[in-house]
Length: 419
Image (tube, rainbow, N blue to C red; front, side):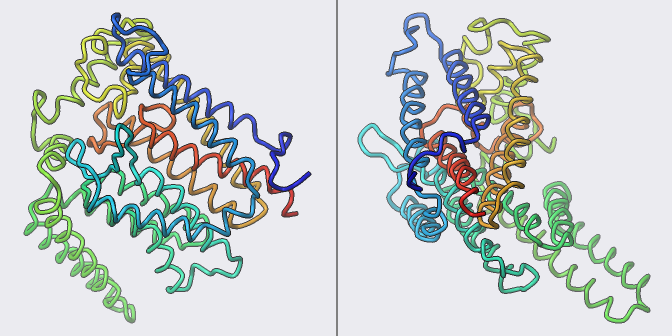
């Protein structure tokens, strides 16, 4: 059989089944989120659920196309795909249409496309291609710089749209570097930077600078007899001061008011349940009102009367919480968890470093979306506008996630040819 044919017996059908299960459950909940008795037909393509059904159908064509390709083509074309994706992110800044305050979309007639959704699988491919070289040593600074540049470039192009939420997704790919040999000290530094980031938003800048200097002085005094110790501490202090000053500047000069307000509400520095905090407040009410087993399908009052804006997209999880209750919400979380464990299993059984790296990139991106999206709906994370994978309304996101996942499924089905 030719390499470009679909090896039915080699495809991981459990992952495929999980994909379609999530997509169809998402479609049913999108129908519930926008349900109107005057437009109740499941095949009403003027409604969001009708459009989502079309996108699911076209996703099937994408799946067939990907599975028919030669498994080697993804590594061969990884850099060209990445380059084209970066050009599209640059172009949308100048020629894109502004929707909901962000210039993130190309619009042609009635069709809109969000290039940041496709940049995720493009970046995953490029990172996998770079690390796929078995001689690529992440202990070398040159390799670390290139790997971080591949990750940070799309984020740097997406954040100015402004779409900080989609830009933050790429930070999840640092976990891929850790799996491929990056020292755990970088993860510790990253955690420290995250803590400093939060402190920068809570503590006045001057007090934080004085505190950092005092802590550094104390550490130097304690370890003063260790040769060269003070140089490392001073270096970390300089890095910390650069970070806290950058966060302060970005927060006050780059982020828009809506982003600043959402962060302040999450941190308890502001309270605006009828304004910028309205979405989250209503989402939490909807989920809480679902109780143990929910109000029943199409019976959600918060959903039916449109109390939660963007309920079919970013806040789709609150529809599940209201109509299916704790049991339904837990079932959805379990379903996603099964998918993540399965993808980790696929990652570890790959025969090439390229395929393994790509697989872990898929897990990292999907898990970031899943955890942050649900955290947004229950008030544990600021509203940064990222969809629940395969579940939220949107053609670009569904197609982007379909490319992301089924490239992996194709690579997995192709692994036996690399023995």
